Image 1 (tube, helix red, strand yellow):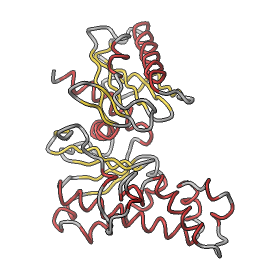
Image 2: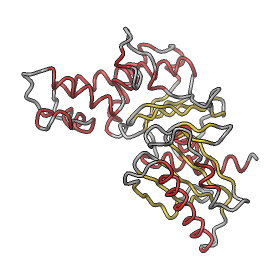
Image 3: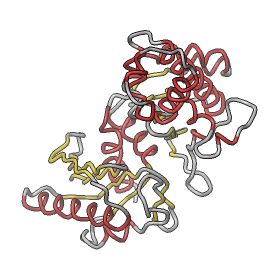
Image 4: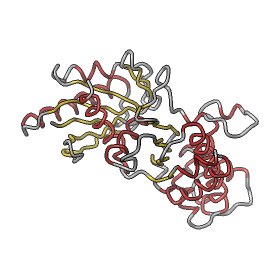
Length: 319
């Protein structure tokens, strides 16, 4: 038996059929191209319908559908909040997908951070772990958490919003939009802090001055860092400090076996994992931090898709 997985992001939808051994068939990515609201739901349903047809023609029996979404899934209503997809504040994604799916095939939807963690436990860096945390650093920062073999969701399914960790006083209204942790150490935050520094330093003539300030991104900061650009070094030193402090709080609170670093920023930030661990050692509970391992994702860009497949497998097995 196989599962169909969809990984819905802010700019694209990835999809595939997964076999029980974790191998992937018919892997595709389709850009949203500016779609919003019901247009995104319609596209997801069309992709799912095509994969169901492909599976039927290929005589691949499908046991379930798993879907990863970039936000919160309300478990009671199965509706979705995804801040980077316009008009998905309380969106009925399940209803869209149910219309094209046979009644004997169930659909399971969960947040991207939970799916990342599932993917790592099934096919990645958290195999054999019963307690692990996936810290996803991309546009924002979120965490998928499995403790004692159980995925944690919280009272209203908002658990893992680690971008809102309070890591540096005093409070400032600059944290209102995204939280303190994300302000300094998300992909958006790294780009924004570099832009601030370039604007503030009129004498600066380095690599980041070579393009319009408004277009400086985290990617540019990492490129400049490799050339020892002083602003890039300063901005990423601050991010490492924040990643270390955030991870230390998680280790002290949850005592995981592994912290897995992923998302678009890790990536290039994987070179800092040893430095992040050293920073965390300053702050964390001393026994827990010696027992935990900091590692990069083993699934690269497929963590969410792989986790969505396992979401369906796991739920189907324990129904």
